[in-house]
Length: 276
Image 1: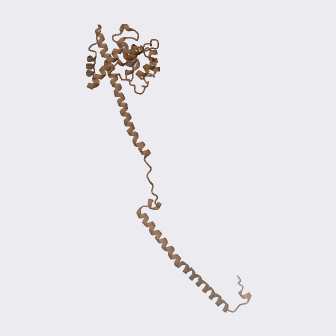
Image 2 (image 1 turned 30 degrees about the horizontal axis):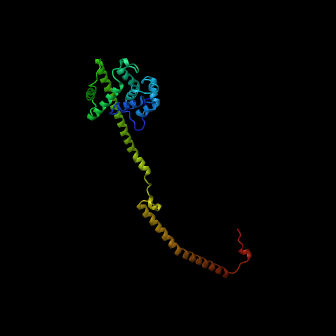
Image 3 (image 1 turned 30 degrees about the vertical axis):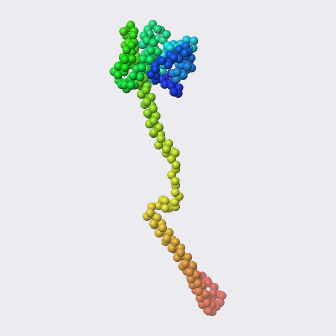
């Protein structure tokens, strides 16, 4: 849950160019921040911060008040968590200052370490040089005023800050990559949306035969129609006359036969009867 905690709108995990300055002003005015105030400052959810405290990555608040040591550790973890595992961030902080609550091994205030990180990121962004040598040059300039009797302290701080710097740069590159990918995905989806929203083509209603048949077939069909029409017209004129003529001819022949039969003498019934 910790690594997937969401930032509140308008807030960022990236260190600011003012370092821990704005938090010091709040602490001076309030004497300590409540959990809800820490959430408002960092953009983290309260359950995330409480889980970090429970795991021992952040000291327990004093009387439900989060002071400089708590908030500095929370802001450092928040700045690195997108690129470094939370367990590894805890080990990194132990490498610098030991376990939370044990000041015997601490070599730097974590609020100062956070301010160093902010200043190093600010200078690196101006030169736009994120090579290892470029980052180390910026860090050496940022910690030039650091003083500690232990000669190993400066080495540890330089190593820790170098790692933290690259983590923040990677986080920024990751976010830019995701933003660019989002724009590309939108472009890929755009034609589909336009295709859906495009009005349907206007369909013209035309005679089916004209729409489907090729020109040569149409000519044959038209010629056939002309032939049939012509035949019907000819039938209307001649066929009736033919029927009348045929009927008259048949009637004339029938009348002639009957007339001839009437002229012949009648035969006895026994002669007219057909026998087989």
